Amino acid sequence: MMSEQLDNTFSALAHPVRRQILARLAAGEATVKELAAPFEMSLPAVSRHIKVLERAGLVVQGQSAQFRPCMLNPAPLREIASWAEQYRPIWEARFDKMEFHLKQLTENGDDD
Image (cartoon, rainbow, N blue to C red):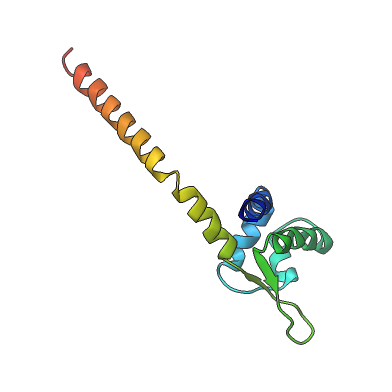
């Protein structure tokens, strides 16, 4: 299940428009029309992007009178952060190794 959720989340995040929509929703809820404003695309096209984000669980739409505000659901992003965290020791070890190597190059270059 978690693997499927990660796949859906990464897939949804793969498109820059969807990432921009999420960035906007991080500031608070918005209508589809408000989300569409910065883009040169139709409302139906933006709605399709929102549907992808909804299927991935990243966006939920409420029901408020005659409009449906969109809201960010951060839970799938936390799952990605948790998944990525398992690789932190590998990244840090590689950065430490690179830093050591660069220090050696710098020190050896000063001898010339």
